[in-house]
Image 1 (cartoon, one colour):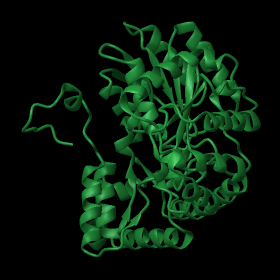
Image 2: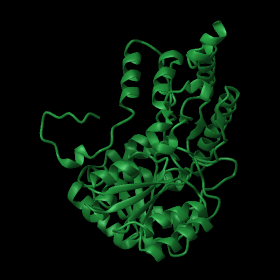
Image 3: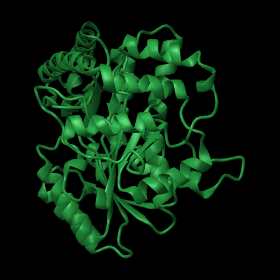
Image 4: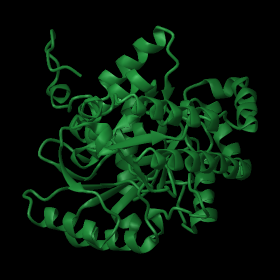
Length: 411
């Protein structure tokens, strides 16, 4: 994003941080236009198909004229009721579909509108660093400020958050959490962590927004706990989920916000002014997803787990440091210093795409504490992932990642 404008744009546009993926996306576009086969491991865009029974229900519902009219911005009641039933079944959490569940146009839209509902000039949000960019951009668009705190999933992280809350005036208003985490794939072991979050929120008066986008995308028998499982969670915050990953419905834009009724009502107010709700046929098809597609989630997770094993093993053999993630569709890799060759990860990502024809997401685009790392998506099939590792290995052997070191060897 550029800061040079020919029109008088709003301050909220000028306040947005630079869009650090711009150069990478532009290079990817130009190379593909020139016929280069770029293996794209940069964006978490599911490439596997939506389960057929969901698609069939969409087609059936789309033919009904009653579903072709404007819907409701909060989502049809049966959809919200089934989401509440799913939470009861999976997390043993009771939600009232009338005022504790709202449908959103994907979790990104819902999160952004929640920030508009809660924040304005002078308000501050605390975000873990590294961070998913929308967690910062949405606050900026709402006119608020962001304080980045080094990410963690333990009491030390919460102590850092508490210190910031207690030593900032005016006190921060919102704490934004995201586990399983994008980009780092960090996870929470138990509900105990969220119990401590609730205690912190009640002690300091801060609201909690938990982005639970990877709620069902888990491996090795791990099940990510929900923030809503913590005692008193509905008193202090909300949680966002999306169907993009577990059901491969990324383009369908089906999401939900659950939790605190007053925060849900504030979000509903904003949405009532902005949209008329999801296409009703999508909502009906999403009910089928919740009722009939548990096996599909398990199969998809098995696919991601197999890809994860190939990718993690290959990157570690290249000299990168990668822990095997228990959730998300990403691996968070510490890039070999030899490969970085003294440059930042954004320059490294550009070099990687140019020389190895592999696109990754540079850690530096996710905040100060992301520098030195790369986020690598598990979206391609196993053969393509193996090819990506071979491409990087060949480029490494040519010395392109460490020009200084290779020159020394030549001498």
